[in-house]
Image 1 (cartoon, rainbow, N blue to C red):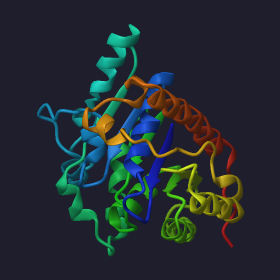
Image 2 (image 1 turned 90 degrees about the vertical axis):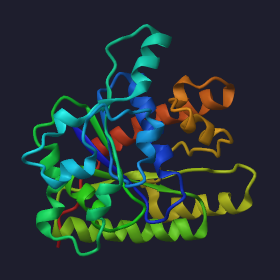
Image 3 (image 1 turned 60 degrees about the horizontal axis):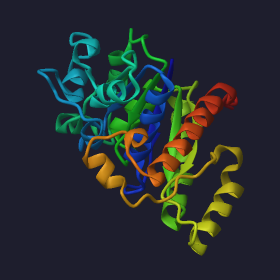
Length: 274
């Protein structure tokens, strides 16, 4: 089972959009997937169309990860029912550990080792999934580091802009330090360039800069800016189920990126710490 944290030091780069895009691709590919919405804003939960149905949000499960079982508090995305009605397949699985404001209690810079293990403990015994995607807050505080400690890989999201590229470089250094101190098996799954405008000279320049800085960790293809993405998320639809050529093209790009993330996760091995 691959556990992948989707992270960004900078907010507003479309981290949750990438999380839900990959979840949509996993659903289409028939990969049993769990999305853990660790962002207190819970935007991924909204986009995935979940209803609490009396279950507990992530923050409450994190409070007592040994006593409160994650399995008892996951909900199915409404995308699964829509996929079944559109494709006539009733065996697809996309579950969500839905987010909420209570998780913000752990989003502190001084989180200790015991607290950093809470998400790992929460995921203990979860073996029914081929993929777990953790949507992290846009920071390097406690929740993100908690997610990294529970993950095999970290997938970074960046826009091709000066501040986002600089933030990605800092996050790569932070991953290396975190790996040395807390999680020796953690490694990058790659970097996704999001909201790319083909007509932008600045974006072309920054993409070339990212290729020079990050090499094969910069995954292909890049995700273009999609004008109706907020509409898709607001309607709680998977991009694979949204009509129109633009959505179909974007869905195909996420199919390719999911394969690239899985391949990178299988092939990349972290170097031994010095």
